[in-house]
Length: 255
Image (tube, rainbow, N blue to C red):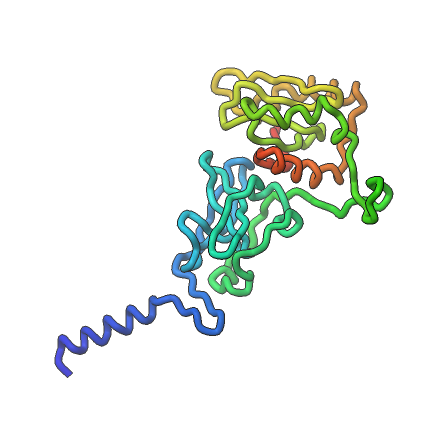
């Protein structure tokens, strides 16, 4: 065999070795796992990788769920419709994806390259099953119906799209908060009766502004005897996406 023919044979073998294998349902992953940071939650990191047949700019998490960055650089989950993917308003770390109705793009067992990776601590909102004690009238299945869903003052925030594009729940005191973008002009905090407005100072982040106002927020929430229940969380997450807002999950302003 001539030297040039041997080189051609080696080149063909290399190309065949890199070509995606789809037989018997196998999938070859052509990129190494990448550790990424979630800017919404300080210190949160998770691994993503790209299957060979993934649409542009899309990745999968270690448990197989499709994710991508939104225009603000925040990682969000996606839903699949055949070969296409559509971004959701569920921010990675804010929900348990299976409980939010998001289906994996691939099965975790297919991501063989991630098996040796160490487990990373991620922040996810606990989403328990609705309690059996609270029933929606006229329904045969138990459904948790929070009081705030009937409160017109609370629900009005769904129409504030000019000043709100995301909503979550403050860690302590537990109460909904909302704002728009990374440098909002105003942050809205639910006090149990109305939306309290927090105006960030110059160069102040939303979390810093909330941290500065924690004392006043706590006083108003206690004075109004507002109680946020754990079962409220999945209800508000669904309502947020219905409004077209990003769901932030639990917001931790820190110390």
